[in-house]
Length: 425
Image 1: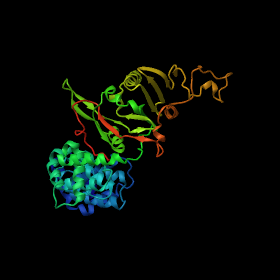
Image 2: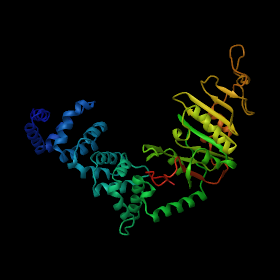
Image 3: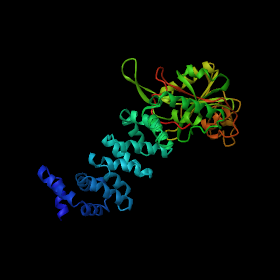
Image 4: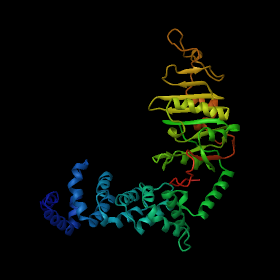
C-alpha cells in the first residue's frame, strides 16, 4: 500500500509531493524495485508500465542495475526491459556505457540506444564503441548512430588511438572502424587511406566470383556488354570511379546516402553505384533507383535507351513481388527492341527474341480458351536475364570473370570519403 501511495504522489502536479515520493523510493530502492518489477509480470502493454517507468526514472542508477539484473534472470520480458532501460537520465550515463561494452550484442545495443538518446560524450562510451567495432563484423544496434552522432567530439581521440603504440592492434582496428563509421574515409589520415587503397588493390587481384544482390522480393539492375561497359559512366552521370572489391561494392550500392548542398542551396541526395567485374561477358550495374533511373516507367525506358547509345546494348530489369512488378527491357543503339511489363497493356512489345518461347507455343496454351498476342512470350525477368546476359541469383564459381568492379558516385565534386559507414573488403 505504501508503494502504491508513493506512485500516486509521483503522478501528481505537486512538485513537493513528487520530490518527497522520489526520495523515499530511492532510499528503499533495493526492496522497492524488485517489488515493482514483480508487479508487471502479467502486463502486456506500455500503458500498463507507465507508473513503474515513472518510478524507475526518479530512482535512477540503483533502479538501472536492478532492471538489468532482472532482465538477465529473465524475470522481465525483453520488450519490458527495453521500455524500462529507455527511461533513465544522465545520472545513468556510465551504466549505459558499461552496457554498450557488453559482449552480448543485444545488451550492447540497449546501451548504445541510451548513449544516443542522451548524446553522451564520455571516455567509457568511446571505448565501448571501439570495442564493438573491433569485436564484431556487424555493429550492435545504434552503435553506428552513436559513431556518427559523436564523430566531431570523438574524431581526434580515435585518431590518437590509431597511432598509439601502447594499445593493442585490436583497439587500433576498432578505432579505425569507428572513425570510418562516423565520418567516412575522409576521417582517416593519409597513412590509413593509402593503406586501404593498397589492400583493395591486393584483394581484387585474386577475388573470387562475387555474390550479387538478390532480386528476391524486390530489386533492379542493368546489364551492359563487357567490351563496351565504360560508356555506362557517362550515360548514368557517374563520377569518381574507383576499383573496388565486389563485397564492398555491393554493400556501398545498397548503403547509406548522404545529403550535400546543391547549386540552388537546397540539399541533394547522393549515393553510389557498383559496376561488377565482367561476368560471362557482361557487366551489371546496381545502385539507387531514384538517382540512376528516376520515374518508374518513363525513367526506365529513357535510361535503358540512353545507356544503349553509349554501350551498344543495355538491358534493364525490375522486380517487386509485393507490388506485382516484373519488367525487362532490351535496347540497342538508342532504341528499345523488346520489352515485357507484367499487367501492362500491352504486356509485350517488340519482336520476340530467338530464345523466347511464345505463349501460343506453350504446351499449356489452348487456342479454344486462351487468348494471347502472337508476340507474347512466357519469360519474366527472372528467367529472361539468364538468356539475355547474367542471372544475379545464379552467378557461381563456374562464371568466367574478368577485370574488377568499380564504385562510382552519383554526383560530381562529392568523392567517396564523405560517405559514413565501414565497407568490408
